Image 1: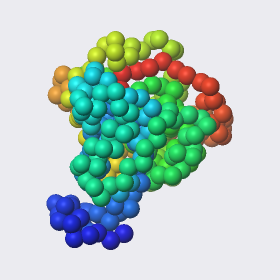
Image 2: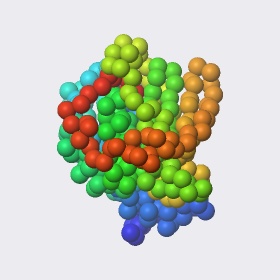
Image 3: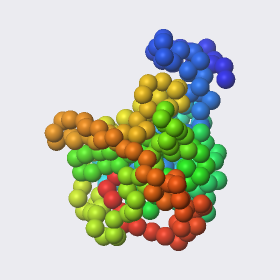
Length: 277
């Protein structure tokens, strides 16, 4: 996919990078990325992907902008309070980079639509705010053979990793899936939600920016993947830590005796919310 003269000027600082160059920028322009959620994580992710020249960004969200969102959901403005988040995000992307196409999906991702939505894109970013959606998106990405860049937030901390369990590690074993870390969701009501415990807004910016960076790396095929490692950001301690994550051969999705063959277990399901936006 060729670049116009204006795009070459716009992406000059990318093109001079030896690991990106003109061919890498063309990969970004050709890429199709789906962002689940236009909230605290989806905001910086979408902004940086748009600025980087990712050609098509899909955004899934059925919510509207509220005043309490604006402390961390930086893709929205005061004038957009009451507007659909997908529309507000699309308009902001248009102001940042007119060369990017935004496909809005004003809906919740469900067992009925997940494979269709995910199948239209090359890579998925999960910035959702509940366990039910996380398991659904992870399972759907595995079945659709799409890499998943995942992020979650606490009040002063964040978690980032990449899942691509449909691919093999250098040793021949699969990369881990979300279910290798969390085999089952916690019981409903045991994890406080964002409205109850709060969140430092800038933490969402740090984690969302890291998600965008890992996404660009996956598209470009550069650097060391975060698959197999969980990065933990501690804002109060001003530090990052990493935990190695291995494939669990007993996990229900990609294990030796996997029981999840489709998304029927998610039909009509639900789970407790956790603070991520």
